[in-house]
Length: 237
Ligand code: UDP
Image (cartoon, rainbow, N blue to C red):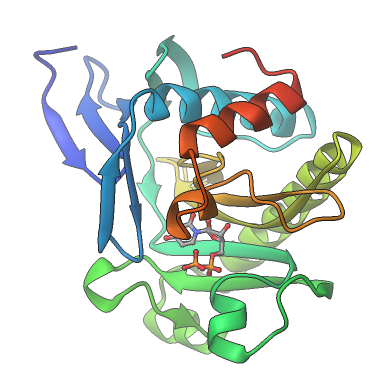
């Protein structure tokens, strides 16, 4: 592993080559970033905790029929995944208004969004991940119309599965971000991670965050609040 060739290093992960051409190793880092990397810190244990959440949520979704890129888990901070070409879209699903929706469009924080909103942002740090209209996606041909329909269908199904599960645990799934990848045979599957870094979770009936807003808004101990969430879910860390 130490000698494996580093293919890519992102804000929260490193991707390494493997002995198989169609597989990579993804290693979760302890870094936290916010505001497109303007705020950056390292938190002991965060990589391990986020991988544990990703395993938990991806398993839950797999049971619900949503495929993902993971082949196997190697150790507490790394996994083996199918090599996919990541679609350059961040897919954000929103059940309640928060974050950029309030900042950008003046929505009152916490109001219920019906129907659920599904938005697309361009994965491009140099442009600050701008929001895209479907017309832009079509114009730039990031994905075909059929692929976009498949992405949206999966995103909304993922939302149904996660929202219902979290609701039963006393947690409101406010919003979250997904990434999808294209496999060598042209399938579009869920990739990247699902963790409190990529979702907003509020204790039901409150706006108390158990997610990265603790860091963005400096509301306390980040990894500590992720561990509180893990406890609520019965997830052993
Ligand atoms: N999100 C993410 N990565 C990003 C941008 C957003 O995981 O680069 C997640 C974020 O944690 C939240 C949801 O997507 O759960 C919606 O984020 P929003 O657009 O409100 O942006 P923010 O307020 O986080 O800047």
